Length: 426
Image (cartoon, rainbow, N blue to C red; front, top):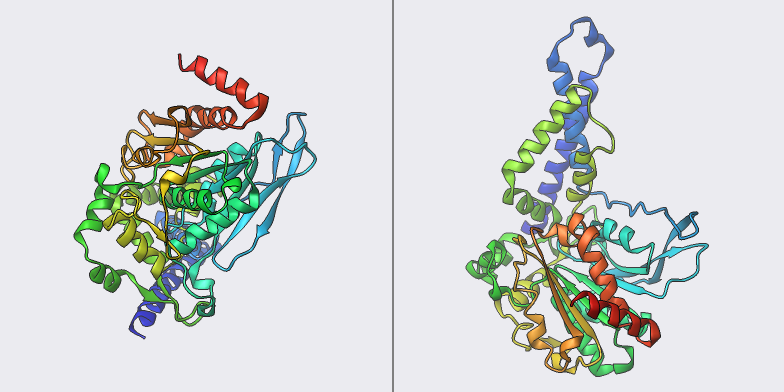
């Protein structure tokens, strides 16, 4: 009950702040105050609007908001979200584009389960859709999953990915971003051993912790300093009474959000101060840069306790992936079983979460791949977010990933792409 009481206390604080913001906005917006003009009322109303919206976003799952794309014929084509596989802890979601011939590139985008919803990859999906058929792993908020559905740890996560790959077939190109990078590699190796004909064509790993010790960061240092007992005591709570997952042990999204903000407190405080000032001057917008960013950033989801704790213990502390000692469902995964999947590594020079070298360590594990089946790219000046959703992704990384997929697609098209890629590399 202690953990449950703490969980509900955090929700009560969030709810109270949302109410205070709404009350301040409503009170300070009465027309009667126009008879006694005072900037205090404008500032109060602006503070209320920003506060109400910010705290409300914390419990709202963002929409994908990808309704159409422009095709090669110059027409808008409707995009429909279709659930191909529905599972208790996450779905395989397809973005089906109507009215255009199906694209040859079939991409499975493995979204992170690290506090934010899969919609964090919205811009990544939107950038791929004009040239690819796109599927994404759409993870569910643990607070909405009844305890009767059982556990969900990194082994279950890996099995989900393996099942999704098998469902999509061998012509798939898998792209894993950040947290799922080591588990996508493990799922590919497990699939290569269990069902070799279902292996994907390529695997692109973007900014993930294959070997956290290869380049220590603040994130890896924290994992080293804190014991598992301390972590469980500080981070794990039980879902409160008003949610479907009441009683489930989780790492709460609101607690994670506090950690995210504390890492860059000064920058966030300044951003909100600037936003309140802009609103008070009448210069704020519903979809301005601040709201677009924080509507997504503040929307957080709970992770199951066993997923969070097993990630810290086995990926960061035990380095099971880096040591080729990872076990899934009682079976030791062997990365040397990957023989037909081309693997590309993408890292950002200024990535302070998964520093350069952590993801690159994957290539040393793939002892059965030929040199031409391995590739890597270090994006100059790019941080963690930029390598999958920012300008660096759009202008530099995305074209390289597309070339890599084409070069290892098989058939005449793949041969032409390989020759083009070889020529461009000198």
